[in-house]
Image (cartoon, rainbow, N blue to C red; front, side, top):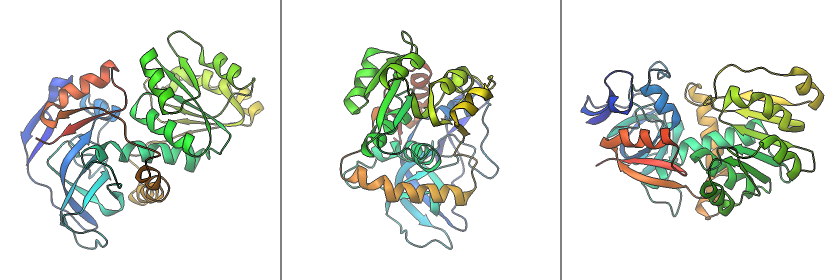
Length: 326
């Protein structure tokens, strides 16, 4: 088969579409013939040599895919050759075939194109696990989403609105903010021109955000804590703004607030399977009914993964960038 390999850590030019050995499904796995994958920021870090796959995972980038089951390994039930699926991966999505633990498979939701289903696994699992399973966002509460026009952000807006929450977003352009508004965001903050701490206070009569979904890390840590409401929950899922920040514990104590930080890739198989099962139960019906949809910025040939990486690095996209097997 062909896959995107990384010749050596570096820029997008390090991504090479090359012939590699076919994977084979092991105990509890299925082999998926990939139709499409999607570009995630973690893939950019892997390309740069900063985020290696966990032990035993495929060395190729790609944390999600859609496609058809080509083979079923020993010990797998409930899936058959030919089933159309999408999957959460630890790696290997940028390839023509990938072996996937059966617990990380999802059926393609009703009404969703097979290619576009590749835009769903990572964002739905990330948002559901952090905003709902860990941070317990409830109807009537306020969620602040940093990077509202990203793949994660556009899914967070839709799911939060679906459960009856109020949503505030940050983004860097008027067009991105308008897109967020069209998805249902209530409070629009241009982070280049406005202070999100002050804007959240204005929008909530001084209360702040009950839950914050943060992709920035250190750069926003202090301001995020200031923005939290009493009993607020800060969920950190990225480090785009650095890895070391100063935490004012007194502020956190006074607000009786909590901070969580998670990633999906290195979690044990059982934890991933539990998240995937929860997404299938709670999110898939919303997608099948049309209340929630994947947001796709563009589709590119998988052999041109370098362009997809450049698009994410320039932050000119809205939603997900897909890589389609030629």
